[in-house]
Image 1: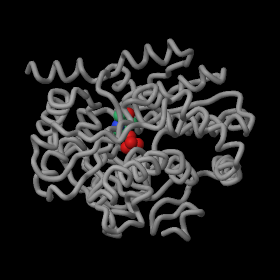
Image 2: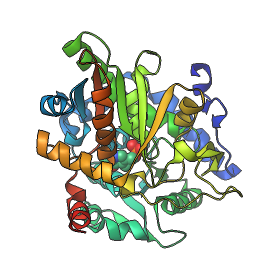
Image 3: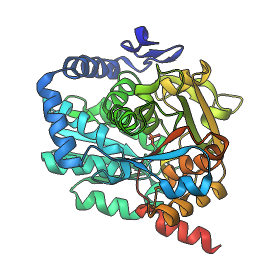
Image 4: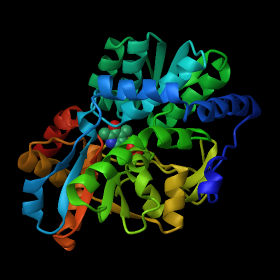
Length: 386
Ligand SMILES: *Cc1c(COP(=O)(O)O)cnc(C)c1O
C-alpha cells in the first residue's frame, strides 16, 4: 500500500483518468504538493495557523458520563467540533490554501455539500484576501441556507448548481468544469479525500493531524493504543485523518460508519467517479445512485480510494446506522455530555453506543467528533416534532 501511495493508487483504486488539459493542471499540483509537504518553512507556517487560528490541538476528551451509561469500553471523543468554523474541514483547507499561495493562485474555487467546506474555504480566503467562488447543489443551498449566508458574509460568491439532483456530486462536476476553463490563475480547493490524484493523498496528509494528535493523547492517558477508532464517512476525509496513524497498528480496529440511506462502502461496487476509481453506489449500468442522508455532508455516492482499498483489503470495517439511531446518538451526546454533535458525527456516536457495551472495560475507543451540531439543530427540531 505504501509503495503505491506516491503515485496515487491504493490497490486498484485511485489514480487519475481525466482529460489531458485537466491532467496537466493536476501534474503541476502534484509536483507542488510533494515539494512542500515536508518543507520546513511550509510546515512552520501551517502549524502556526493550526495553533493560532484554528485553536489546535483539539482535546481528546474522556466521555465519562457516556461511558458509564453504556457500560463497557471507555469512550474518548476527538473534539474536531471545537476547531474554528466548527469542523475538521479547516485542517485541509489551511493546508491547501498555503499551497495555493505558494503556487501564485489569484482565485480559489471549491465545492460544498453541507456548507461546512464552503464556509471553511471562504474563511481562509477572507483571512488571506483571495477571491473565492463556492459551488453548492441547489437542493443543499435550501437545506443549509444559513451556511450560504455565512459564506457570503465572508466575501465568497456562492453558485447554486441546479443540474442533476442539485447535490454535492453536481457541485463537484461544476467546480471541475470551472477549473478546466480557468486553471491558469485558479486553485481548486477540494474538500474531501476524493477526486483524482493528488487530492486524496493531499487531503489525507493535511487531515492526518487528527490521528497524530489523538495517538499521542491516547498513549499519554491510557498508556496503550485504543481498541477501535470510529468515524463517519462521506467522502472520507475526517475518517482517513482519524485513522491515518493507526493503519499500520493492526490491533486497532478502524470503523467507518455510514448512513443506511447512503451506504456506499456497504453496498457499492468498484467504479469510476470524477476521474478516479473507487467504490461507488451505482445501478446495473454503472450510473451513480441518488443518496438520501439526513446529514448533507454524508450524501455522496462515492468514497475516497484509500477507504475503498481499506475495505477490500479487510483492514477497516464498515457499518451502517439508521436515521433513528443517529437522532438517538445526537440527543444522547447532547444530554449526557453537553456536546451537540453535527448530524454527520452523530453517526459515529450512534455506533459507539452499540460497540462500547460489547467491549471490555479494559478497552477504550476513540470517536471522531468531526463537527459541531449548531448547523443541524433546526433540522433535528423539525424531525423530532414529526
Ligand atoms: C463534511 C463533513 C463530513 C463528511 O466529510 P468527510 O470527508 O467524509 O469527512 C463529516 N462531518 C462533518 C461535520 C462535515 O462537515
